Image (cartoon, rainbow, N blue to C red; front, top):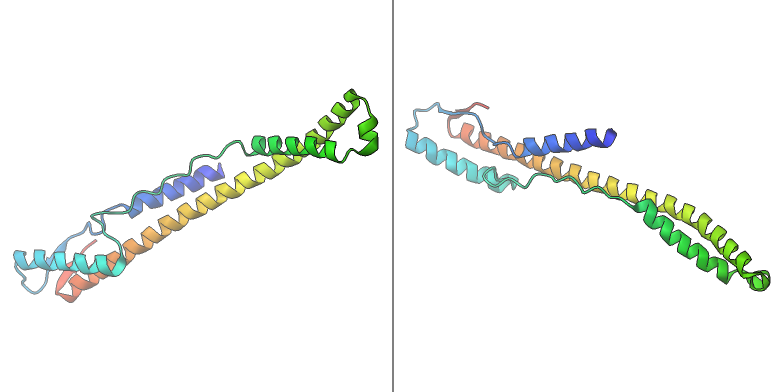
Length: 169
C-alpha cells in the first residue's frame, strides 16, 4: 500500500513537471505593440531556458515507474542451496566419506536446505534495496525537474516584468 502511494506521488510530480510553464497571460503596461510583446516573450523564453536548463517546449520525459523486481528470494535460495550442497561435501570429513550414500545425500540435503533459507533472506533483502534505490532515483529526477521548472518560471516572469509587462499565472 505504501509503495502504491509513493508511486502515485511520483507520477503526480511528473505530471506537474510536464505542465505548460507559462499558462497565464502577458499584459503590456508601457503601451508595447503586439509585435514588440511577441518579441519580448520569445526573448524572455530564451533567457529563461538558458538560465534554468528547462525548456517547456521540450520537457523531459515523464518519470517512468521502475519495473517490479521479482524472484529475489528464489534466486537467493537456489544459490544458497547449491552452495550448501557443495560445502556439505567439502567439509564432510572422514565421517561423511565413510557414511552410506543415503546418509551423505541426507546430510547434503539438510545443509542445502539451511543454506537455501539463508539465501532466500539475502535475496529478498537485495531486492528490497534495489527497489528503494529505484524509487529514490525517481524521486530525485522528479524533484530536479520541478526545481528547473520553478527556476524557468521565475526567470521568465522576472524578465517580462523588467521589460514592462504584467504576467498572470
